[in-house]
Image (tube, rainbow, N blue to C red; front, side, top):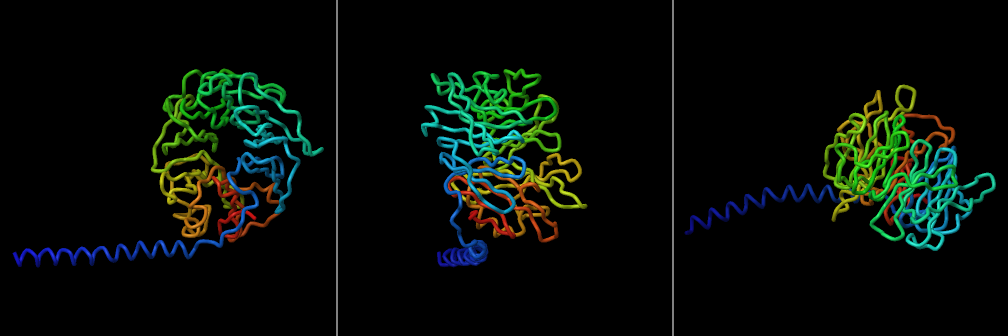
Length: 377
Protein backbone atom coordinates (compact mmCIF):
# COMPACT_ATOMS: atom_id res chain seq x y z
CA UNK A 1 0.00 0.00 0.00
CA UNK A 2 2.85 2.40 0.88
CA UNK A 3 4.48 1.66 -2.49
CA UNK A 4 1.22 2.37 -4.33
CA UNK A 5 0.84 5.73 -2.56
CA UNK A 6 4.41 6.71 -3.45
CA UNK A 7 3.77 5.81 -7.11
CA UNK A 8 0.60 7.93 -7.16
CA UNK A 9 2.47 10.85 -5.58
CA UNK A 10 5.25 10.57 -8.17
CA UNK A 11 2.74 10.53 -11.02
CA UNK A 12 1.01 13.60 -9.55
CA UNK A 13 4.30 15.50 -9.33
CA UNK A 14 5.18 14.59 -12.92
CA UNK A 15 1.75 15.78 -14.08
CA UNK A 16 2.12 19.09 -12.25
CA UNK A 17 5.61 19.63 -13.69
CA UNK A 18 4.25 18.94 -17.18
CA UNK A 19 1.17 21.20 -16.84
CA UNK A 20 2.96 24.19 -15.33
CA UNK A 21 4.96 25.10 -18.47
CA UNK A 22 1.83 24.74 -20.59
CA UNK A 23 -0.15 27.04 -18.31
CA UNK A 24 2.77 29.44 -18.21
CA UNK A 25 2.90 29.58 -22.04
CA UNK A 26 -0.86 30.12 -22.21
CA UNK A 27 -0.66 32.93 -19.64
CA UNK A 28 2.28 34.48 -21.49
CA UNK A 29 0.25 34.43 -24.72
CA UNK A 30 -2.76 36.06 -23.04
CA UNK A 31 -0.63 38.76 -21.39
CA UNK A 32 1.22 39.36 -24.67
CA UNK A 33 -2.04 39.92 -26.52
CA UNK A 34 -3.26 42.26 -23.77
CA UNK A 35 -0.02 44.22 -23.98
CA UNK A 36 -0.69 44.76 -27.70
CA UNK A 37 -4.27 45.94 -27.22
CA UNK A 38 -4.59 49.54 -28.48
CA UNK A 39 -6.08 52.24 -26.31
CA UNK A 40 -9.80 52.18 -27.19
CA UNK A 41 -11.23 55.11 -29.15
CA UNK A 42 -14.81 56.34 -29.40
CA UNK A 43 -16.07 55.45 -32.89
CA UNK A 44 -17.30 58.21 -35.18
CA UNK A 45 -20.13 55.88 -36.19
CA UNK A 46 -21.32 53.84 -33.18
CA UNK A 47 -23.37 50.67 -32.88
CA UNK A 48 -23.96 48.25 -35.73
CA UNK A 49 -22.74 49.64 -39.04
CA UNK A 50 -24.10 49.19 -42.58
CA UNK A 51 -22.34 48.01 -45.70
CA UNK A 52 -19.97 50.55 -47.26
CA UNK A 53 -20.68 51.89 -50.75
CA UNK A 54 -18.13 53.57 -53.04
CA UNK A 55 -19.32 56.09 -55.65
CA UNK A 56 -16.46 57.54 -57.69
CA UNK A 57 -14.10 59.18 -55.15
CA UNK A 58 -16.34 58.84 -52.10
CA UNK A 59 -17.18 56.15 -49.59
CA UNK A 60 -20.55 56.17 -47.81
CA UNK A 61 -21.48 54.38 -44.58
CA UNK A 62 -24.08 54.71 -41.81
CA UNK A 63 -25.19 53.30 -38.48
CA UNK A 64 -27.80 50.64 -39.14
CA UNK A 65 -31.29 51.92 -38.21
CA UNK A 66 -29.86 55.42 -37.70
CA UNK A 67 -30.69 58.42 -39.89
CA UNK A 68 -27.25 59.85 -40.72
CA UNK A 69 -25.03 58.92 -43.66
CA UNK A 70 -21.32 59.68 -43.46
CA UNK A 71 -19.09 60.39 -46.45
CA UNK A 72 -15.32 59.81 -46.54
CA UNK A 73 -13.00 61.15 -49.25
CA UNK A 74 -9.27 61.88 -49.28
CA UNK A 75 -8.87 61.77 -45.51
CA UNK A 76 -11.93 63.85 -44.59
CA UNK A 77 -15.29 62.88 -43.10
CA UNK A 78 -18.53 64.77 -43.77
CA UNK A 79 -22.28 64.09 -43.69
CA UNK A 80 -24.85 64.22 -46.46
CA UNK A 81 -28.57 64.99 -46.25
CA UNK A 82 -30.76 62.51 -44.40
CA UNK A 83 -32.81 60.09 -46.54
CA UNK A 84 -35.98 60.41 -44.43
CA UNK A 85 -36.12 57.37 -42.19
CA UNK A 86 -34.12 54.63 -40.51
CA UNK A 87 -31.33 53.30 -42.72
CA UNK A 88 -31.22 49.58 -43.42
CA UNK A 89 -28.29 49.45 -45.83
CA UNK A 90 -26.37 51.25 -48.57
CA UNK A 91 -25.31 50.14 -52.03
CA UNK A 92 -23.83 51.63 -55.20
CA UNK A 93 -24.38 50.69 -58.82
CA UNK A 94 -21.02 52.31 -59.63
CA UNK A 95 -22.64 55.62 -60.58
CA UNK A 96 -25.12 56.49 -57.83
CA UNK A 97 -25.70 55.83 -54.13
CA UNK A 98 -28.84 53.96 -53.06
CA UNK A 99 -30.20 53.54 -49.54
CA UNK A 100 -32.70 51.07 -48.12
CA UNK A 101 -34.88 53.27 -45.89
CA UNK A 102 -37.63 52.46 -43.38
CA UNK A 103 -39.66 55.73 -43.18
CA UNK A 104 -41.59 54.66 -40.05
CA UNK A 105 -38.52 53.16 -38.40
CA UNK A 106 -40.09 49.68 -38.54
CA UNK A 107 -38.68 47.31 -41.21
CA UNK A 108 -41.93 45.33 -41.20
CA UNK A 109 -44.18 48.33 -41.95
CA UNK A 110 -42.80 50.51 -44.75
CA UNK A 111 -39.64 50.31 -46.85
CA UNK A 112 -38.32 52.17 -49.87
CA UNK A 113 -35.14 52.33 -51.95
CA UNK A 114 -34.00 55.92 -52.43
CA UNK A 115 -31.34 57.29 -54.79
CA UNK A 116 -29.02 60.12 -53.76
CA UNK A 117 -28.35 63.12 -55.99
CA UNK A 118 -24.88 64.36 -55.04
CA UNK A 119 -25.27 67.52 -57.15
CA UNK A 120 -28.26 68.78 -55.16
CA UNK A 121 -27.51 66.86 -51.95
CA UNK A 122 -31.03 65.46 -52.01
CA UNK A 123 -32.89 62.15 -52.27
CA UNK A 124 -35.56 61.06 -54.70
CA UNK A 125 -39.00 59.99 -53.50
CA UNK A 126 -38.05 56.34 -53.54
CA UNK A 127 -39.35 53.06 -54.87
CA UNK A 128 -41.39 50.58 -52.86
CA UNK A 129 -42.39 47.03 -53.72
CA UNK A 130 -46.04 46.03 -54.09
CA UNK A 131 -46.94 43.36 -51.49
CA UNK A 132 -43.37 43.20 -50.13
CA UNK A 133 -41.19 44.64 -47.39
CA UNK A 134 -37.68 45.23 -48.69
CA UNK A 135 -35.17 43.58 -46.36
CA UNK A 136 -31.86 43.78 -48.25
CA UNK A 137 -30.26 45.45 -51.29
CA UNK A 138 -27.20 44.47 -53.38
CA UNK A 139 -25.38 45.43 -56.56
CA UNK A 140 -24.29 42.97 -59.24
CA UNK A 141 -22.55 44.39 -62.27
CA UNK A 142 -24.38 47.72 -62.09
CA UNK A 143 -27.85 46.29 -61.41
CA UNK A 144 -29.59 46.71 -58.04
CA UNK A 145 -31.40 43.69 -56.58
CA UNK A 146 -33.44 43.48 -53.40
CA UNK A 147 -34.69 40.80 -51.05
CA UNK A 148 -38.43 41.06 -50.49
CA UNK A 149 -40.50 39.63 -47.63
CA UNK A 150 -44.20 39.16 -48.44
CA UNK A 151 -46.57 41.32 -46.41
CA UNK A 152 -49.05 38.47 -45.89
CA UNK A 153 -46.53 35.72 -45.16
CA UNK A 154 -43.27 36.58 -43.40
CA UNK A 155 -41.82 33.18 -44.39
CA UNK A 156 -42.26 33.91 -48.10
CA UNK A 157 -39.37 35.69 -49.84
CA UNK A 158 -38.74 36.85 -53.40
CA UNK A 159 -35.88 38.45 -55.32
CA UNK A 160 -36.68 41.87 -56.80
CA UNK A 161 -34.92 43.80 -59.58
CA UNK A 162 -34.78 47.60 -59.58
CA UNK A 163 -35.48 48.58 -63.18
CA UNK A 164 -34.71 52.12 -64.28
CA UNK A 165 -34.64 53.32 -60.64
CA UNK A 166 -38.45 53.56 -60.88
CA UNK A 167 -39.83 50.03 -60.55
CA UNK A 168 -39.12 46.98 -58.42
CA UNK A 169 -40.01 43.81 -60.34
CA UNK A 170 -40.08 40.33 -58.73
CA UNK A 171 -37.88 37.95 -60.74
CA UNK A 172 -37.76 34.91 -58.43
CA UNK A 173 -40.47 33.68 -56.06
CA UNK A 174 -40.59 31.58 -52.88
CA UNK A 175 -36.86 31.79 -52.18
CA UNK A 176 -35.00 32.38 -48.93
CA UNK A 177 -33.98 35.91 -47.94
CA UNK A 178 -31.48 37.44 -50.39
CA UNK A 179 -28.03 37.83 -48.79
CA UNK A 180 -25.89 38.84 -51.77
CA UNK A 181 -25.50 39.11 -55.54
CA UNK A 182 -22.53 38.92 -57.90
CA UNK A 183 -22.02 38.86 -61.67
CA UNK A 184 -19.61 36.80 -63.74
CA UNK A 185 -19.85 37.19 -67.50
CA UNK A 186 -23.52 37.44 -68.41
CA UNK A 187 -24.76 35.47 -65.39
CA UNK A 188 -25.91 36.83 -62.03
CA UNK A 189 -25.53 34.67 -58.92
CA UNK A 190 -27.88 35.22 -55.98
CA UNK A 191 -26.92 34.12 -52.47
CA UNK A 192 -29.81 33.11 -50.21
CA UNK A 193 -30.05 32.19 -46.54
CA UNK A 194 -31.29 28.62 -46.89
CA UNK A 195 -31.87 28.02 -50.59
CA UNK A 196 -28.26 27.99 -51.76
CA UNK A 197 -27.18 29.99 -54.82
CA UNK A 198 -29.63 30.78 -57.62
CA UNK A 199 -28.46 31.72 -61.11
CA UNK A 200 -29.96 34.20 -63.56
CA UNK A 201 -29.23 33.68 -67.25
CA UNK A 202 -30.78 36.05 -69.77
CA UNK A 203 -33.04 37.45 -67.07
CA UNK A 204 -34.51 34.08 -66.09
CA UNK A 205 -33.69 32.93 -62.56
CA UNK A 206 -33.30 29.21 -61.99
CA UNK A 207 -35.94 27.59 -59.80
CA UNK A 208 -33.42 25.19 -58.25
CA UNK A 209 -30.11 26.01 -56.54
CA UNK A 210 -26.80 25.62 -58.34
CA UNK A 211 -25.26 22.17 -58.00
CA UNK A 212 -23.29 21.86 -54.78
CA UNK A 213 -25.29 24.54 -52.92
CA UNK A 214 -28.73 22.99 -52.35
CA UNK A 215 -30.02 23.75 -48.85
CA UNK A 216 -26.99 25.87 -47.99
CA UNK A 217 -27.33 29.08 -45.98
CA UNK A 218 -25.12 31.50 -47.92
CA UNK A 219 -24.18 34.73 -46.14
CA UNK A 220 -22.12 36.47 -48.82
CA UNK A 221 -20.95 36.29 -52.43
CA UNK A 222 -18.35 38.08 -54.57
CA UNK A 223 -16.50 37.82 -57.89
CA UNK A 224 -12.70 37.76 -58.05
CA UNK A 225 -10.48 36.79 -60.96
CA UNK A 226 -13.57 35.86 -62.97
CA UNK A 227 -14.61 33.32 -60.32
CA UNK A 228 -17.65 33.53 -58.05
CA UNK A 229 -16.83 32.88 -54.37
CA UNK A 230 -19.46 32.52 -51.64
CA UNK A 231 -19.36 31.84 -47.90
CA UNK A 232 -21.84 30.02 -45.69
CA UNK A 233 -22.92 30.43 -42.09
CA UNK A 234 -21.58 26.95 -41.30
CA UNK A 235 -18.03 27.74 -42.43
CA UNK A 236 -18.42 26.59 -46.02
CA UNK A 237 -16.48 28.30 -48.83
CA UNK A 238 -18.03 27.79 -52.27
CA UNK A 239 -16.24 28.44 -55.57
CA UNK A 240 -17.69 28.26 -59.06
CA UNK A 241 -16.20 25.19 -60.75
CA UNK A 242 -18.18 25.27 -64.00
CA UNK A 243 -21.33 27.08 -65.17
CA UNK A 244 -24.07 26.14 -62.73
CA UNK A 245 -21.88 24.07 -60.39
CA UNK A 246 -19.92 24.88 -57.23
CA UNK A 247 -17.18 23.10 -55.31
CA UNK A 248 -16.89 23.69 -51.57
CA UNK A 249 -14.82 23.02 -48.50
CA UNK A 250 -15.54 23.72 -44.84
CA UNK A 251 -13.40 25.44 -42.23
CA UNK A 252 -13.93 25.87 -38.51
CA UNK A 253 -15.35 29.40 -38.48
CA UNK A 254 -18.73 31.02 -39.08
CA UNK A 255 -18.75 33.63 -41.84
CA UNK A 256 -20.83 36.82 -41.52
CA UNK A 257 -20.91 37.50 -45.27
CA UNK A 258 -18.42 40.40 -45.20
CA UNK A 259 -16.18 39.97 -48.27
CA UNK A 260 -13.60 42.24 -49.91
CA UNK A 261 -10.60 41.88 -52.20
CA UNK A 262 -7.34 43.13 -50.64
CA UNK A 263 -4.68 44.37 -53.05
CA UNK A 264 -0.94 44.44 -52.56
CA UNK A 265 1.50 46.78 -54.28
CA UNK A 266 3.95 44.49 -56.03
CA UNK A 267 5.83 44.62 -59.32
CA UNK A 268 4.91 48.28 -59.75
CA UNK A 269 1.13 47.76 -59.63
CA UNK A 270 -1.71 46.86 -57.28
CA UNK A 271 -2.65 43.18 -57.56
CA UNK A 272 -5.39 41.18 -55.80
CA UNK A 273 -3.67 39.07 -53.13
CA UNK A 274 -6.27 38.19 -50.50
CA UNK A 275 -10.00 37.86 -50.03
CA UNK A 276 -10.95 39.21 -46.59
CA UNK A 277 -13.84 37.27 -45.02
CA UNK A 278 -15.68 38.50 -41.91
CA UNK A 279 -16.24 35.97 -39.11
CA UNK A 280 -18.37 35.64 -36.00
CA UNK A 281 -17.41 33.35 -33.13
CA UNK A 282 -19.87 30.95 -31.55
CA UNK A 283 -19.60 31.47 -27.79
CA UNK A 284 -16.06 32.82 -28.01
CA UNK A 285 -14.54 36.12 -29.13
CA UNK A 286 -11.40 34.28 -30.25
CA UNK A 287 -12.97 33.53 -33.65
CA UNK A 288 -14.39 37.00 -34.34
CA UNK A 289 -12.72 39.44 -36.73
CA UNK A 290 -11.94 38.20 -40.22
CA UNK A 291 -9.86 35.67 -42.12
CA UNK A 292 -7.70 35.88 -45.25
CA UNK A 293 -8.25 33.61 -48.25
CA UNK A 294 -5.15 33.57 -50.42
CA UNK A 295 -5.65 34.51 -54.08
CA UNK A 296 -3.49 33.34 -56.97
CA UNK A 297 -0.96 36.17 -57.52
CA UNK A 298 -1.27 35.98 -61.31
CA UNK A 299 -4.99 35.45 -61.88
CA UNK A 300 -6.60 36.73 -58.67
CA UNK A 301 -8.52 33.46 -58.46
CA UNK A 302 -9.20 31.92 -55.03
CA UNK A 303 -7.08 29.13 -53.58
CA UNK A 304 -7.96 26.81 -50.67
CA UNK A 305 -5.50 28.49 -48.30
CA UNK A 306 -7.32 30.23 -45.43
CA UNK A 307 -5.47 31.75 -42.50
CA UNK A 308 -5.66 34.37 -39.78
CA UNK A 309 -4.40 37.91 -40.38
CA UNK A 310 -0.69 38.21 -39.64
CA UNK A 311 0.01 34.47 -39.81
CA UNK A 312 1.96 34.60 -43.08
CA UNK A 313 2.82 36.91 -45.96
CA UNK A 314 1.04 38.48 -47.72
CA UNK A 315 -1.28 39.76 -45.02
CA UNK A 316 -3.54 42.73 -44.43
CA UNK A 317 -1.83 43.39 -41.06
CA UNK A 318 1.76 43.65 -39.88
CA UNK A 319 1.32 42.30 -36.35
CA UNK A 320 -0.91 39.35 -35.46
CA UNK A 321 -1.08 39.99 -31.67
CA UNK A 322 -2.22 43.56 -32.36
CA UNK A 323 -4.92 42.23 -34.70
CA UNK A 324 -6.03 39.59 -32.17
CA UNK A 325 -6.31 42.13 -29.34
CA UNK A 326 -8.24 44.70 -31.41
CA UNK A 327 -10.58 43.96 -34.34
CA UNK A 328 -10.11 40.25 -33.65
CA UNK A 329 -12.58 40.43 -30.75
CA UNK A 330 -15.38 42.00 -32.82
CA UNK A 331 -17.61 40.34 -35.45
CA UNK A 332 -16.91 42.02 -38.81
CA UNK A 333 -20.11 42.57 -40.82
CA UNK A 334 -18.56 44.48 -43.76
CA UNK A 335 -14.98 45.24 -44.80
CA UNK A 336 -13.24 47.17 -47.57
CA UNK A 337 -9.74 48.26 -48.51
CA UNK A 338 -10.12 51.83 -49.76
CA UNK A 339 -9.57 52.19 -53.52
CA UNK A 340 -7.11 54.72 -54.92
CA UNK A 341 -9.74 57.26 -55.96
CA UNK A 342 -11.07 57.48 -52.37
CA UNK A 343 -7.61 57.65 -50.80
CA UNK A 344 -6.39 60.40 -53.13
CA UNK A 345 -2.77 60.85 -54.23
CA UNK A 346 -0.23 58.72 -52.43
CA UNK A 347 3.24 57.30 -52.94
CA UNK A 348 3.51 53.59 -52.21
CA UNK A 349 6.45 52.52 -50.08
CA UNK A 350 7.29 49.37 -48.10
CA UNK A 351 5.82 51.01 -44.97
CA UNK A 352 2.70 52.55 -46.53
CA UNK A 353 -0.63 50.72 -46.53
CA UNK A 354 -4.08 51.78 -47.77
CA UNK A 355 -6.70 52.28 -45.07
CA UNK A 356 -9.09 49.39 -44.41
CA UNK A 357 -12.54 50.06 -42.96
CA UNK A 358 -14.58 47.42 -41.14
CA UNK A 359 -18.21 47.59 -40.00
CA UNK A 360 -18.61 45.74 -36.72
CA UNK A 361 -21.60 44.34 -34.91
CA UNK A 362 -22.42 46.78 -32.09
CA UNK A 363 -18.90 48.28 -31.79
CA UNK A 364 -19.05 50.89 -34.53
CA UNK A 365 -16.86 51.58 -37.55
CA UNK A 366 -13.21 50.51 -37.29
CA UNK A 367 -10.17 51.29 -39.44
CA UNK A 368 -6.69 49.94 -40.02
CA UNK A 369 -4.17 52.77 -40.03
CA UNK A 370 -0.41 52.88 -39.39
CA UNK A 371 -0.24 49.17 -38.64
CA UNK A 372 -3.03 49.14 -36.08
CA UNK A 373 -6.79 48.42 -35.93
CA UNK A 374 -8.94 50.74 -33.82
CA UNK A 375 -12.31 52.49 -33.87
CA UNK A 376 -12.45 55.19 -36.54
CA UNK A 377 -12.65 58.58 -34.84
